[in-house]
Each structure stands twice: as structure tokens, then as C-alpha cells.
Length: 142
Picture: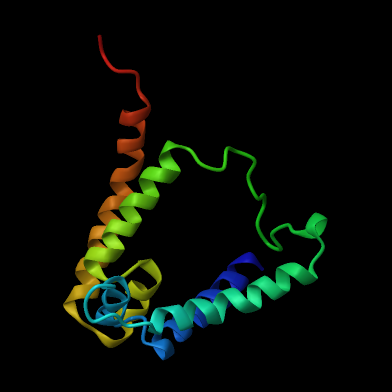
């Protein structure tokens, strides 16, 4: 059942990205170019997601806010070194490439070498991340 929910959610998300134009890297980079040819389109896409979710959160009681199909919501620290480093790397990659994982996958549906290169680089980073994390967590040699 969990896989079915993931498939439906991912397909709906991908369709939304294509319809909204967020698979176009120039739109995303235009959002980040606040001193140049700024494109506010992404603000409307984010608002289209944030507003209904804010209403849903207000309607649901705080004690019942648990993931519907996930096994746990986690109990670790909210911000740690891995979280901050991952956020910085994600943001830098998003700004340089104009893509994040969702739009990159959706962009494969209409071709283009840029999306393929991005996905290969993302896969390489995902493979390298556990090794890098282990190295960073290890104590420094004396």
C-alpha cells in the first residue's frame, strides 16, 4: 500500500511540475535572479502548495499529526551538521543547475541532455554520500 501511495503522489507531483513549468531551468534560475530578470512564477507554485497545506495543518489536531503511511517521524535533533551541509549543497546545486530532484525526473519525460547529466551527477552524489559521511564522522588522526 505504501508503494502505491508513493507512486500516486510522485505521479501527481511530476504532472504538477510539468504543468507549472518548473521543469524549465530558466524559470527556476529566473526566480533566483533577484537583481536581474526576476521571474516570480515559482512564488505562485509554492503558494499553491503552502496555502492548502497550511489550512490542512490548522484543521488537524496537533496530536494526530503523524505520517499516514511512514513508519516514524523521527526523534533526532532538528538541525545537525548533516542537515545544514546537505541543505547548503542542495541549494547550491539547485541554483547552479536550475533543477532539484523532482523536476529533474519530470524533465526526462521530454528529453534533453541537461536533465540526464543532472540525474547522473545526483546519483553519483547519493552513492558517494555515505562514504563522505563516514569520513566526516571519523575522529581526526593525531
